[in-house]
Length: 357
Image (cartoon, rainbow, N blue to C red):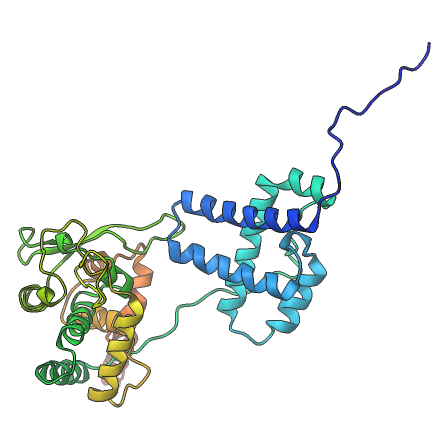
């Protein structure tokens, strides 16, 4: 019995040029962004992951699929040794997710082009440990907040640019009154204000923060706590300084002062609102320079509502939290569980001693 000649039927591939590898790496990253977008992740989350990958790629000096465990040991053990744990964990998660994508989508192509078998360089031995904890934020008191907004309001009549200053003031009031996130404020349209709903009117938040990759989460926010008066004043007396067409589809509730080519105003960015709040704090609340941010106003709103008797479940729904434990971190200033337990214990001790005297 003779052996037959066997010919390899696979395509004979010429060596990959450096230019082809660069183009392929760019296409792979673009595909990663599209895949994460199709999974429903927010644009900010995707940008954050890509930013982490860019920094690792710049340090490595070669495509990320060439990264080995020894590279991760050096990167996290030396370069990122002293950075906050949240940054280390976020960067490690971005690397893990990207390598999962490479293994699922491009394993065969990378092997054919480079001869390399893709494998995640992070393992149980070098993966950064720890949990990302939310930063403790202690909001200003009700008196300090009243001082801020009173001084800000009084300065509107003499400020150099009334419309942008009044817009920033109204946005900050909205964050302090109903706890909106700054990105949620920026994403609002005029048509998102539903005056006919509920007792005070409601805001349709269409771009709420999602959790666990679920994408933007919508909710209806009632205009309680004086937010209805703030919005009515702003829409009736300020909004017209930016645009004269209230019926234009997609007209932003908080426009930029820079007009588009058709004369309409684009949406304001969160940086402008942050700068406006920081400038007002420097002028009217000097004890809080650099510390008063939009998210601190959100904490202030939750703490004040809890202090005035609103239950945690209602605050959770207002803020758009998935878990009640998250809401409890927002009302820590006014929670008195430890003090109440101590007072009860002292009372029990006094009663026991009273029977002995």
